[in-house]
Image (tube, rainbow, N blue to C red; front, top):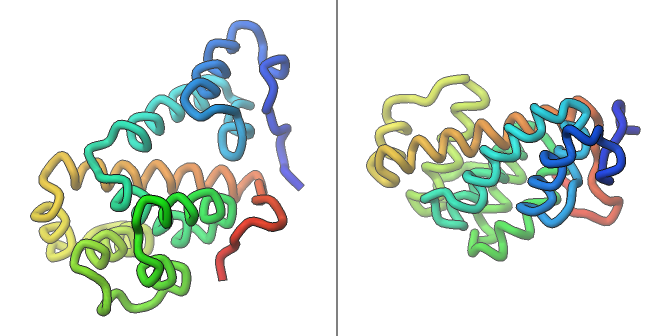
Amino acid sequence: MVRVPRITERSQVADEHGEIFDSITSSRGRVSGPFSVLLNSPETAGRAAHLGAYLRFDSTLPDDQRELAIITAAREFDCDYEWSAHKGLAQQAGVRDEAIEIVANKGSVDSLTSEEATIISYGRELFQDHRVSDSTFDAAKEMFGEQGVTELTATMGYYGMLACALNAFQVEPAPDAPRLP
């Protein structure tokens, strides 16, 4: 059971926050998931949505790299909702099934491409150790450049924040949605 009201209709927000609701709807098609609970603080939801719109739709990271970063964050936070929302998007973006399975099962990255291994290792170190080793950071910077490694970090942090909201407020995916092992 969700711990705060889920706001999914414009009529549920005060008139002065209607623009925030509309902005979220215009970029995502509807209000659901993390934004349905974040709208209990409309300004928080609006600012988060603004950053998220850039990271998800306009980032310099290619779709497959971004989606691999997102599912890595989802897995590190054991966030079923985020996993269910992005596993299919990762597949559609061209993330290999082997990489998805390794993320899902917290397996070794040794058999993956260097790009895949770097993204997953970067996220695992960031979320488990709260730091990224010099070798992993240098590999990511070499692959993605300064802007790319910055956007990789921001993407993982952003989806980590959404996972925190989803987990804290106990927002669950649909019963038939894919779940983490």
